[in-house]
Image 1 (cartoon, one colour):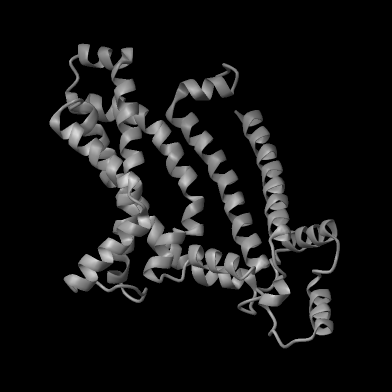
Image 2 (image 1 turned 180 degrees about the vertical axis):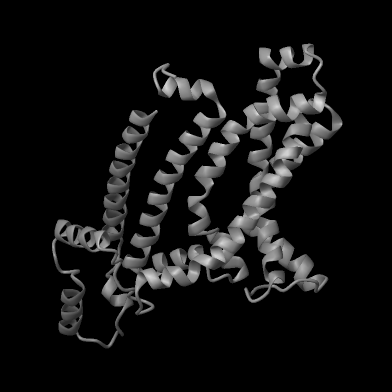
Length: 312
């Protein structure tokens, strides 16, 4: 297990380096001049060249990348060309809004989807199963921006029950959270159902019933525990996007989170901000992937034994 974790850490570090290089390359090759987004149109070409030299944009590509990596290693993500402030401080101001939205969305999604997935497996091919699965497919197919706009028109405009946008009170998060949960719970529900149905066919479930254990005990201790292994992996892999935020949802409801920041920065070619946000997502993805492997090993002894080569 230890050798496997070390191997995954090394792979993760290589992945972070590759992602950082890819992101830097994409931003470098974007059409347009980022200097034009910073200065006024009336600024002379000579002054634009001076600003480009001050920002280091006139240097070769590899030199720019090396300088950026060196600054990141010292905790310096640079200065935003649009907001004229430190990128790390800028992200620190936006992270709480994205966390409030996405953490509550993830919690509610799991609270709703996991029991429904278990019930659908228990009542397979029944009316409840068919209705719930078809409804989840419909919600998955509906674009989140359309669902959010529909909620705004109905609950905010027609009924005047909830605010359209804002972030100053808990009521402002009801519609964004509801939109995020409904748009994302379908996949979790269907995966839970599929995993539970696979566990139903395992011999240890039949043995548990043969021992006379209550159905509730078998469902919770044997079926649901083993079915949650894959679901746990999905939860860990969704954590990095808690920081980046739901880009479309934040834009629709006017939440000043990380997703909104990322989208606006791409539009105006605020290169330091885009690189910092995507770099942060890459690091969190690697860390959460490693944590998911460790948790899966703790939940399933078979995985732990396979990773350790069969040693105790």
